[in-house]
Image (cartoon, rainbow, N blue to C red; front, top):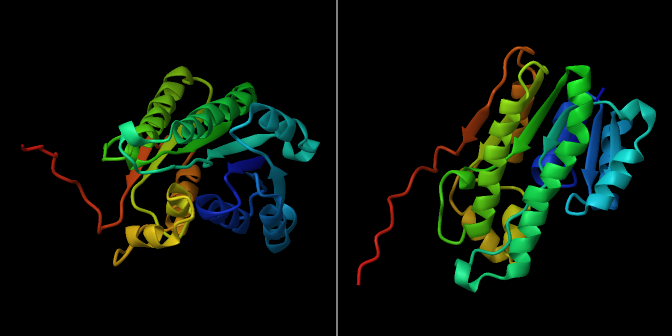
Length: 248
């Protein structure tokens, strides 16, 4: 039995791979960047299997999953971590290509890979899907537009999977992080503008990738009859904002 983690070459995914291997699990780390996966394999050893896969491309998903050696084909835990935010412009100024990329990755890719893996879990009556959502799926903010909408989809998709799966012993969880630093998230969002990305986390004790990995491990280690439906995580420094009012 193995654990499949997408977006494994950096951030949450890399931290998840390290922790689950450390805990003795066999982990398949899936990502586009083959060199980073190879480096991770050298670090983690034989319990880690590098799988080059682009979740935004259905053919890439098919080829990757179908290429798995027999001993790695039974997936006990799927962590749908791969995803991204692009841009922070208001909707009327946003780049549609950015919107399309977020939809293709955060929604279609996550959904397609789940559809690929879920039947084997149901057949075995054993499995767990952990989706990495975001508090952006609950709380809108200026510039969040399609990114927030994509994470709202992840939230509702997770809930509806739960509604479909009673009697199958398959668990589904949505982890919804708030402000998390030490990853490539904001660097990607701001398209390589590292200075702007650093300002997001300035003077804030943010949640780390390791924090999220620890939470995912705790969720997975709960007794098989316990399902953590969702868990919302913010740093203590982050809280709720007042509703905006426009005044002329």
